[in-house]
Length: 315
Image 1 (tube, rainbow, N blue to C red):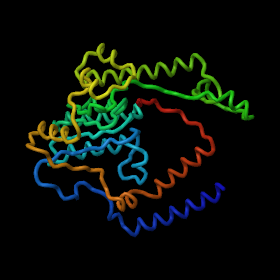
Image 2: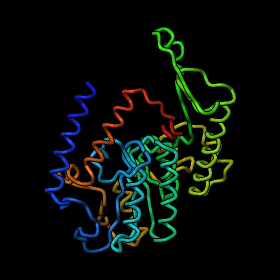
Image 3: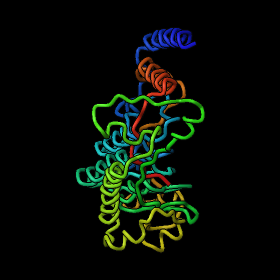
């Protein structure tokens, strides 16, 4: 069965690669070659879905995998060098995701503000929690709806102990390892107290980093942040009362406010660097690499390859 899947995948890659070669890269996206709208603009950067590390951008699977730090950082840099862009609006609808991805994006937001001196505002729709709030905290202003779910300031790492289940169905785990902690978080055995402490120390370290980001971004005393950061979610209305966000308003309220911060009168024109039509989405980038990567991931999952869960900041 696996052999048949592999052969089919190779044929698919060959066909797609041939189509890409015929297109000759004419469908690739380049913001510098796009016609510029006259007048000052606001760059809208979408943060939709789970936030993960990775390149993202033009990958044909990007929409399915959520918001990637690589794509968001790239768009921030595009906005910084685009002379027609006077401000940035982060449009967030995300429950959170990878702590590392949030750290990457936040560092790029700080760099954007320091180097471009352009304002950056965050607006949240349904959800802007945990890692999504992490990156929003670095913005100049945060807009939410009264019913938006936000906050969830915290970090976790989790695993499942399936040892008893394995015994019942006759599966025995064999682990050849180079060090005593190499199989930490294995689902075939309980963690030792020492291993639990190792992971708790890591989580605490990243939690403190999260608190510092919120404290600096919101200009809020650390003791106050710590009280609010017990992992709970808040409604937008509650978050505003607590000082975690600035204003209640929808996307267009945030857009007008972003333009006003940049000195633009009325509702500003916008530009979105990452938007492509469906044809360009399918036939841009290295399709063969992307398809092959997904096939390898599927085969590894089928073979039961062990993976260490990355620390999460999710609502």
